[in-house]
Length: 259
Image 1: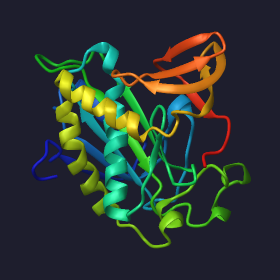
Image 2: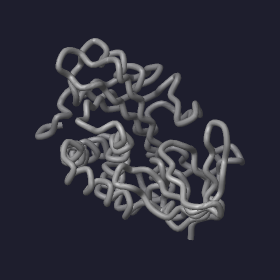
Image 3: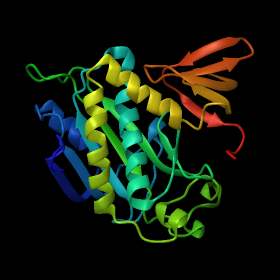
């Protein structure tokens, strides 16, 4: 994308995983800004190893290689800026206002999922003076599901697409260009405390999880409470009957539908 660090865009008809590809490229010393885009992923995955299959050429499947100058405690912001840029792009190209479900899902106006983000870091893969890479992948449901009947019954109330939400086709190439254009200043912000605070404030403002009754699922436990805040590091603060807890990483379930 001209005018950004994302000028090296590599396109694939089919690939196992755009995230896996960029992690391999990072280990070979690839610089920040390489982008991988696929029409179809054979082994694409989301958080907690979840799978999501869509017909080839229907949705936007893209990963970006970042080498952010981030304190360890703020690494969540690397994935948050991609989710925020996706929200910017969807608004600009499709005219649809979206919200962010913590940690990084993009939701339509009625709370159904439009996109998911998966960040993977390789902290041992710095090449020479390069900072360790973080690969952030996002899958945006553009043309599929085209109808709710396309989905298995258990997903008809939780998933959606830009085609369903807007009632008209949305150009994937235009959406990718808008995403990369919106991502450039957000990634630049990660290198300074003021910029990181600005991105955290945007995350806080767009986070529809705040104020919701939630269940937080951790690897070895779960708890319920009310989502109260997002910290300047991008972590979720939850008020529970036993006191306030800060969640650095976990799966969050909204216990009641969004209104």
